[in-house]
Length: 246
Image 1 (cartoon, one colour):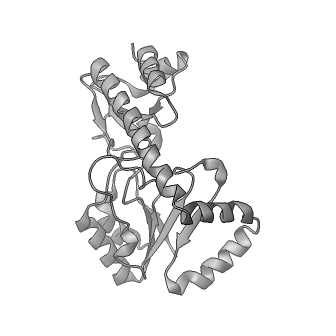
Image 2: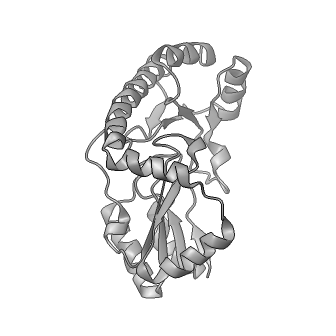
């Protein structure tokens, strides 16, 4: 089976690209594409499901941080449109901690047995203790409380970063702010993202050029920086912008 992974910010071209590749499986992040923050529209979702039905293929939905949405209504999972054609994957990495190393999949009934077999040969060491603790955390309602608390905290940090950028870089365009733990700042014309990142790094501020996330970067794409904010206090965000983007 050929698997296609849709390039950064090209989720709107999914169906036409898939028809060209002859793939029977595709990996998508419909709720929050990384790093641009794009969302797969309802029309595209239905087109993608229709493609999977036509070719008897599968959509692998990587729903890695949909719980952290700050503006507007929550974005539903694609899996609900076609449970027999969508493999839903989630993880505790963003909602709790990467070190927990717990993930899950909701697979169509026809794939339960082969998925179990693949998992058996891929990894026999998934820790039971952590799974049991997480199950209790989920069933007790503590996870929902944690997410509500962290959404408020992360939204405040996001808003602080936006304000700092708007004060210091009025010519920049800020994208991907509705959800997640980072945003993208598209730079004004003539500014080189790599140079800005190098200058910031010399001042102990880490910024990530968006070009590093492209395999083949289209000429139409401007220069930009990926900026994380979840692990920083509001004071650290202000100090970082002051130091890194004087």
